[in-house]
Image (cartoon, rainbow, N blue to C red; front, side):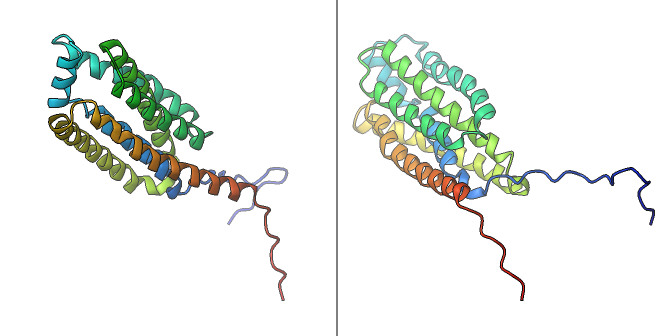
Length: 214
């Protein structure tokens, strides 16, 4: 075994900073799932109902989905960039936008208000997707199973959105399914707040001195 040359420091590989615990992703994942839910809620009878009620043209599907996905694409980049720094604040903001957009859609008197509500909720969805992706990329080895799990939850949320939109539109009218964002958003918001408090408390807690050796 050779010793390092005099006057030179032994080269050691830097230790990468530890990623966030997996449980801190619960809030962002719930927000991302809510965004996926609201993406597909406007399909089938739901889309037909709002199109007839608000007298939208035949290309309403392009407008409704475009108004959601374009702001979402912009917000994803923002979430990826700022998510690791302020995950709780961005997650809470994303949930607030998702719920606000759903309320605006529920109360929309015309097509313009509907598209504005879709844009607001779409921006919240993209923000949640970006934050979630940024945090998953930093959890280390856990992302091997966390990535497919998150993708599965997203697909299930989209399927649930389509089913809820179709069932609600047939029985209650096209506006009522959007109100499902209120209880779902409340649960996600509460979870994100609790996790944020726990993380903040752990960061500010004074380090315990090592126990003296006997």
